[in-house]
Image (cartoon, rainbow, N blue to C red; front, top):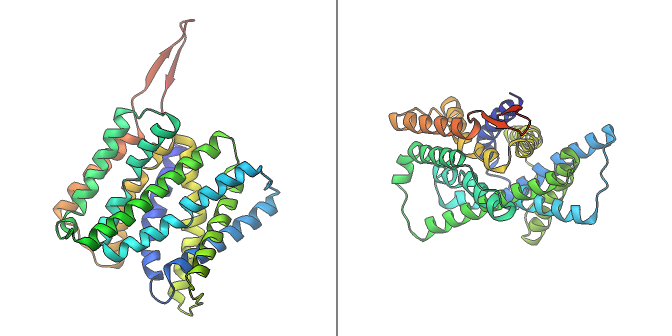
Length: 305
């Protein structure tokens, strides 16, 4: 039950961050907004760790993986996703990013030699198919010209980077590194990477007076970054990256309902069919039948994910 709660919290949080990101676009460049987001999130988590007396001293080797996590999950992947949005409609970017679930299954097999369960693989594919059906009208208007192909390439690179970040997180979990301190330092590295990128590109560190920008930034810091990533990384540690990654297939559906509330979006029959496929795939990934393990002593143990 606790896994399900964390999973639903992750889906809800990241399903609502798309609107907050959209509200940030305009006066401030994406790379600067990403820098602000993770700088503030890192600072708040650092203060929390200090207040709680959490140990922030780790081996150099662990810091290397914190840096990699910051690179893949807390900085560069967002740059590619933002850039992809310049060339592609948002629905197509969402579809491509939902491939994280399949990338996680593949990378878990390649890196950790973890063979995917047929049920999980089928559920992820069904959910992805549902997302495609859901955005079918937008997909149908996609023109595969050079800019569209370039945008798809950016989106896939960003998606792959996020998936690799999941693998780094799994490595940290296997080495029993504490979640909050390791996430804090990784966000610090992510903010540092974005700062260097901004300086190299002569980005303007604008401080807008727009209340909507600051409201969306605070939402992304407290809810999207601190709560969202801690929930997601906790989910990775509990159910593995393959199942946790399926949240990325599910959160576009939440984003739709947010659009219905704030952008006057209306559901079509195609939308409902797509939502049904996503729910069915979600059920297959998150739940499986109980299996009974029999030991030499004759004792039996029910095992359920």
